[in-house]
Each structure stands twice: as structure tokens, then as C-alpha cells.
Length: 192
View 1 (cartoon, rainbow, N blue to C red):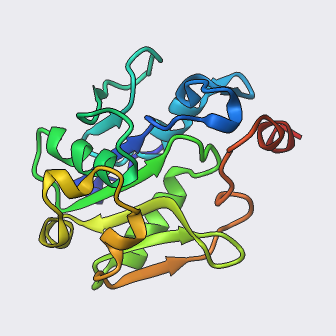
View 2: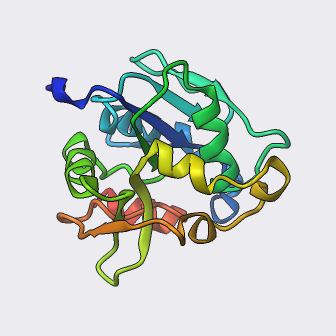
């Protein structure tokens, strides 16, 4: 996989701490598709990132070094996960990529398109064919810091509330890259 060297200042956060209720509580990071874990796909999608933080339980091996962290308290939702991940970065990013671990069709090319779309804006997010925002995006780190709620309010906060004041580009999917896996049936269908 080729790395885009012009992506300096880009760091990634993989959100892998959900409850997976419709999948019997399984750790989605370790779910396999075509012999690879969902976490491996997510880390590959962030190949251009200077560093990657995974917010969720440690335990699934990665080929690339990543930092594992969890929110305090755990399972605080995507806002708490994103901000916990940003806080764990060793570098100060210019752009932060965020990706849910259950979107194995998102690739490095997807993230590059999102970075391109975010140019001159506060960020960009992938949307599904119906226009619903997916948990795959890129945010200007300074703008994210400007809308950041205090620690108490971020736990359980809806992502759309955090992002509401931001000027975000919507990026249409290329093929099935906007699909997420919320159930065993979704995984079965994706594997076909």
C-alpha cells in the first residue's frame, strides 16, 4: 500500500469501543472479513496518518504500531471516543481522521478523498447513498477543539450535536465504502 507523503499533520482515531448489541456484544475490531480483522482494514485506511489511536479494548493485533485507549468511563459514545483518541495523540495534528472500526470498505483512497474535500472547510464526512453521515471523516483539529464540550457533556453526546456548528463537506461513497456492519446479516451480505 502506497503512503501519501504530503499528508503530514494528519493523525487518525479508530472508534472500536461500541457495544455491538446486534452482534451479541462481540468486539468488532476482531471480526474477520476475507481473513482480515476489521481493525486491520481500519488501520490500513489510515496508512497516511502520522499516528493512529484506537479507542477500544486492546487485544486485536495490528501490523502497524497503534496506541490503544478507552474512554473514562468506558462506552461513552462516539464523541467521547473521538475526543479521548485526540487527547491520546502524541503529535499535535492539523487534521484528524476518524473512522468506525465496523466500516471495512473504507480505504486509504476514501480518506484521501475526505481530506481533499475538507480543504478550506472544517472537515468532511462520508455519507451513505441516502445522504446520512457515516462515521468516516476528517476534521480540522483546531475547529474540533473550538467546539469541544467539557468532559462531563461529551459522554453520551450525539456526534451530530458536536459537529453541528462546523462547515462540513459531504462526500458521496464510491461503491460500498459507506457500508457499516451492525449485525451478523450485514457481515454475511458484505462477504458475498
